[in-house]
Length: 400
Image (cartoon, rainbow, N blue to C red):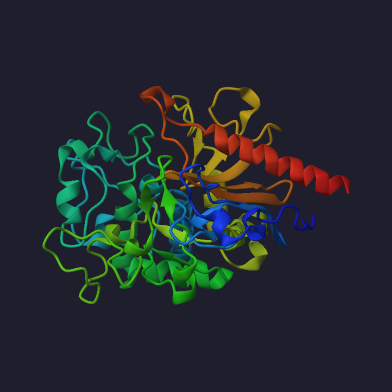
């Protein structure tokens, strides 16, 4: 299917004065939805204000912090290194790091990259998961509250944990001698022709000028205004420690690149990554073996989960046909694979219908926070409404 441009940005037609914030009206939150198939990428919805300070309207490929979709990109980088022969998904991650990664309660059970990517390592976020430059990843993993206490890695129940991502990224660094942001650029962004970066460390001036500022629903700046962009410090740094990557040693603490959520990329470029899930192994991005490992991993079912009911190597499957899971983003009941993102007032998603050969990449900003602990998991009403708009536009295009 070839998509055409259906909905242009509402903001493009507005003068700057009409876009700026006024006491009487809130600006339209920055929102972008693009549709793609195996061969083309087309914006569907592009609206709102990327920077309320300047009144700059968002454009279709403006880079934005995509939150946990970053984990999907991390998985692709990992599998590319598997194909390079640099790492093994089932090896003890300690072998790469040079120090022992062990649950304090199960010191004889190894921790693997596969377990970490699938959130089955026993790690949990109760000890926190941001380890700034100047602090120690090994010390963080030595904390008992960072681990599930009642079962060893591999047998521990699924628990979505951001802390696993810095461990994966640091292991990739140790195995290659490269910084994590360089690894992702070399193995994912550059081969797919996508412009992206982690925590702004390798984004160019043109990308920085188009950064989408993240706002909370209150209007408060959450991330990525001018104060959060280069030449200011863009990585987490310990108190009284210099913000300087020149002396950083790969394989020590890749948490500074926020592998769990710190990718900045535009939706058109994110769709290029999504297209790889729609193509055959003949394009040589991943080998047949690693492609099989990736897709078969999502057959792992988690009966006790309301949202992550099917989750594999940083790859989620959603399907609301049985009504059991809180994954009613699309009403058609078709199985889609991808990943959701949520942080700093942003909701985002990259979802592929492999059988149909189509996909959607989107983000929207200034989304209200969850209202209660029982509200964990699932999609926000604004996301659902946004996908309804997108599907209606696609149906209209099909009828024309």
